Figure (cartoon, rainbow, N blue to C red):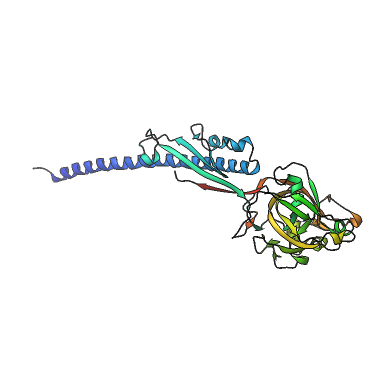
Length: 363
């Protein structure tokens, strides 16, 4: 007579054997997928890093070999992955670059299917990234922004109308004595993007409205409330005569030599220079912001006391009342955390300051 328990034991042994096959298969897939995921993250990081490096190089030096050949950031592939990773040649389209990085994955147990394999059937981790660099749109505020307008002729003289960025510094006048007792002469210059700007005054102006009291400015943070400032609005040199406008003292107190600021470049209209050749108490005109430049600060004197001037101050003048800003224009990319942009509209003019955007692409 057969013991039924022995039949049950045999059936259980078969079931355990079958389950072991399934469990081992799941374990193999888990190990393999884990290995693939690790390499996938690494190649994606490498693609992001290289695309970002190329975009930054092209924004700062568009004619450099590191930009035109895409060699910028080439070391990031090996440093983020290893020697087995390969990067294809970057693909450029206008102000956009696409980067691809691949690495074969050593599968311990099984392959993960065609979606993770190349044409030879080998499992490959793939990273794809696209980065673009564009002219900065309308800035309305941020840590790296001061509402100090620099005249287009000042910018053009220092940068050959935005075509070159030498290392030499410029000192820009903008205060009482420079306008009160000196002759003010209207200037003409080639402006960035083509054309000629006429009737310009070589002064910096605080773009805060007449006397600094108009509501185009957020007095709590020294930022603009509205934007983009592409239409004419009234300004006055009396803003600069008074030193640092209300609400901007806090931001000026944090200013340091070497800081890179987003500076509005303005074009003046309706300037009445002829009446100012003897005594100039206030020069009033309309201004239009045409774009934003990166300005590396080397010194400033916006007032007579405290942080309103650097040490040493770059200018003095009669009775120590001459105000000025010293530094140089450079090509630079913005810090997303340091600038705020208008939600609508924008100014598409290359004045050396670019914004970078990066995105991951489907595998």
